[in-house]
Length: 165
Image (cartoon, rainbow, N blue to C red; front, side, top):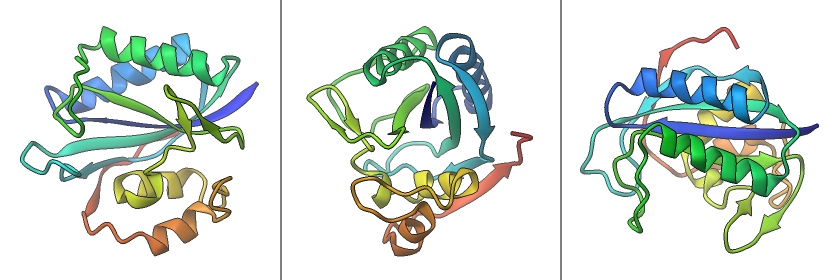
């Protein structure tokens, strides 16, 4: 089994329901969810002229390879109505990104793990700090708590709901 950390987010439609449906599909198609962070609300990052996002981090145990996990997550996004275009940081029903996959460093055209921007985004680091504050970023050799303290992102990350994960 492989350990993967994911970040889920969305800012269109019923955001909480979209997160719940994504979690159910991840559980059915990708692996066993072992931990979930609280749900947080954050202003949009990058392209700020859009609705606020809800975000949640997950830890899963998966039998899938990293590329198979990516393909499964993309199919889940599509099932939930995600339409991918070539613009970055746009509104979306759901977005599911792989943050970490074991301690692997993967750098291909289709997949980059650890996620290349995670250390720059409070909306990723805050929920990850709930799940695994001492998890070491295999490329930067710093734990999540340190990355959170060093992050220069000023967007406020507000706890919306506590989960029982």
